[in-house]
Every structure is written in C-alpha cells, then in structure tokens.
Amino acid sequence: MARTQYYTAATVDGFIADEKNSLDWLFEVPTEPGWDDGGEFSRFFGGVGAMCMGATTYEWVLDHDKLLERPEKWQTYYGQTPCWIFTHRALPPVPGANLKFVQGDVAPVHDAMVEAAAGKNVWLVGGGELVGSFADAGRLDDIILTMAPAFLGRGAPVLPRRLTAARLKLVSAERAGQFAKLRYEIRR
Image (cartoon, rainbow, N blue to C red; front, side, top):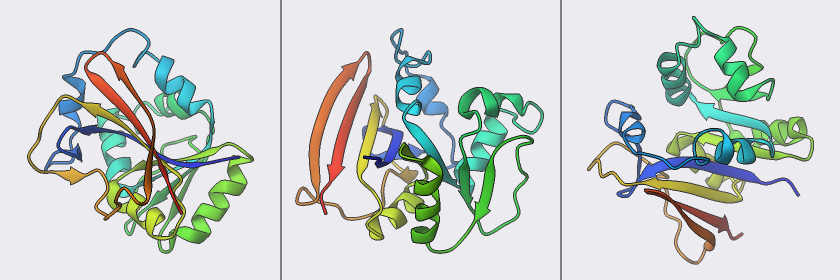
C-alpha cells in the first residue's frame, strides 16, 4: 500500500536548514559510496509517484541547482514525477517540470497526490511546517530522517509539532558512514 513519507536530512539537534535556509552544512559531511551517488536516493525515489514541497524549499532548490538556467537538472533528479508546491506567492516554474502551485488545506491536495501516484508513495520533501500540516491532517505515514553529524543551534526544525512515543514506532535504524538513517512509522 502506498505511504506518505517525509524523507529528509537533519542535524543531530533537529534542524533541516540553517537560519538562512541553507543546506551547506549537509554538503560538508563525507559520504560512503552508494549512499549519495544515486544508490540510496534512487532506491527511495523509485517508489515515489508524487511529491510536494513548500515555497522555501522550492526556492532553495531553484537557486542551489540553478534550475531556471539548467532545467534539465530537474528532469535528471525527478523526471516527470508530479510535484505540488505550496506557496502564497508567485514563483517561477522550472521549464518542462510537472509542477502544480497550490495553497490552503493539505487534505484535498494529498488526495490528488495519492491519485496521481497511482499506487506509489507520496514524498513530502519539506519544510517541516508543511509536513506538520500533513501530520495534523492525519496524512503522514512515515518519517525517514538521515541524521548528519552537525549541530546548528537554530534554524528550520525537522517537524515543529508534538509527536511523542505514543504516536511513533521506530521501524529501522542504520549507519552509513557519518550518517544515521532512522525510520519512524506514525501510529494513528
């Protein structure tokens, strides 16, 4: 059965981005072969049929990868997987990308993503507040955290919601070089 999954990298102290919404801290971490060269992400993304992200995440990806100048990079990463962008402002689309700009309640958008995913998983890319809205609506099944050996002290939190052990079940924990990958299932 298809799952709605929040798959993200985070610091040990629980942040997905620094105060300037940068992920530069993440790229400082050395990785082992197979973890970031398409192996780990390719396995995960192979099961994804639809995805969404917030405006800040989308803008970071646009800028970091220069996608308006090199839109083919989006295709390399995500192909024609449909992506919903939650935003309250006008954002430039990546040419050729299958994007839908939306706002408001996550529940009807989630229903559309599940339908578009056609039996595959839905990936909630981030940010944490957006993913929190999915959790609030009962539309989040898994949290998959790749923890990096970094402490930021402040920034964008992984998930600014109260989810305690009563609602979380640790499904797996594995090590990959300097990273720890934790997978939690959300109990209903």
